[in-house]
Length: 173
Image 1 (cartoon, rainbow, N blue to C red):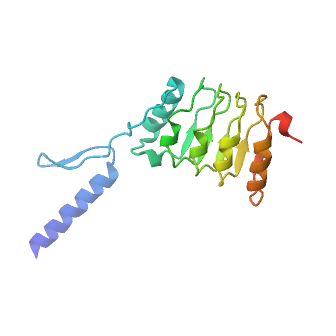
Image 2 (image 1 turned 135 degrees about the horizontal axis):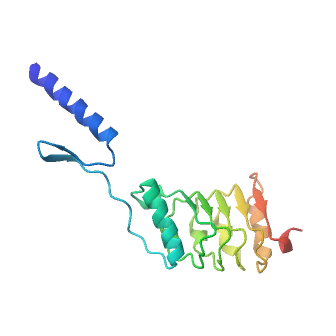
Image 3 (image 1 turned 120 degrees about the vertical axis):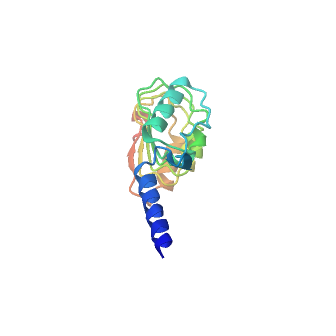
């Protein structure tokens, strides 16, 4: 009976240590009983500015897998390419305002996006946005080269939702 109580006590102490020290390894009698998951590093992004932003976010939030990165704010970062961003398929909120982005094809593969801010870029083709069926917020204002045809289709696709939509001036009619 005494050994069961001791075992229960040791289990409780170990549990408290591991939950309170989730970022630290825990050892008992020089035996490691818990090692925290390592920071996620299995991704490649073509744009160095995007890479730096993603890397900093992963570090700040101690993200250990691609699906844990659900929010990313890389506004005003000098980004020109989104190649490789599709690795973070669970993204729900993405802010890429005030960059130099032309091609947004990678964003079309982020089907869980709910909030997307692409204000002040150089986007010309919004067609990849047609794949995003969960959008509640979409800001595309000040993209002077953007064509409007697909944006009108997107509005119709998301008509059943209350969509916070900001269109480029040439598409606002």
